[in-house]
Image 1: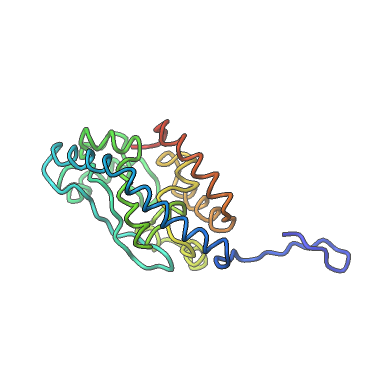
Image 2: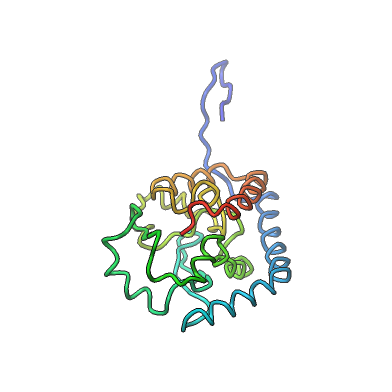
Amino acid sequence: MIRPIGGLPLLDVQEAGFHGASWWLKSVLDRLSAVVLCVVLSPVFAAIAVAVRLSSPGPVLYRQSRVGLKGREFTLLKFRTMCEGADKDLATLRELNEHDGPLFKMRRDPRVTPVGRFLRRYSLDELPQIWNVLTGTMSLIGPRPPLASEVDRYPGDLRRRRLLVRPGITGLWQVSGRSDLSWEETVRLDLQYVENWSVLLDAAVMWKTVRAVVSGRGAY
């Protein structure tokens, strides 16, 4: 922000604040929206659960540890899109990684089931994270929920700023290319959200998320 001081325009850099009426409104909207979505999407949840269960042996839900608000770890929920025991096969596929940084991404990952490929394309595998929103570990909109291995690579100041807010089911990374983005780009977008958060920004991201999900661009 530019402030006139003594007749001179000076750049005043302020750390983003996450308090007050707007921040309280975000929390309330998160919980209310999550309740409504759970009710409205319950038939979709049931259909996906049956499809996942019939597509291959294994649980319906996949659980993974992620880092959330102020560095606290939580269990992120997804519909399972891979065959059971896929995590054990990761070491053999590591050299085929198509993503930079600590993330592992393959456009044609052999561990992904046919049903899982469809769910990933339209981000339907992320729907169980609505429960994470209800429990307060995530927000509908926010930075991408990082792995502990990613956070370990953050410089001290970046780690502090990046973890000032709850991670989101969708965010600037979701509407800007998803898996097509480099690791550095996703981190930059995460910080951009944290430092420029507003209710209007959340509304814009939610609107763009619909287009991103329908197009399926960058999802694999």
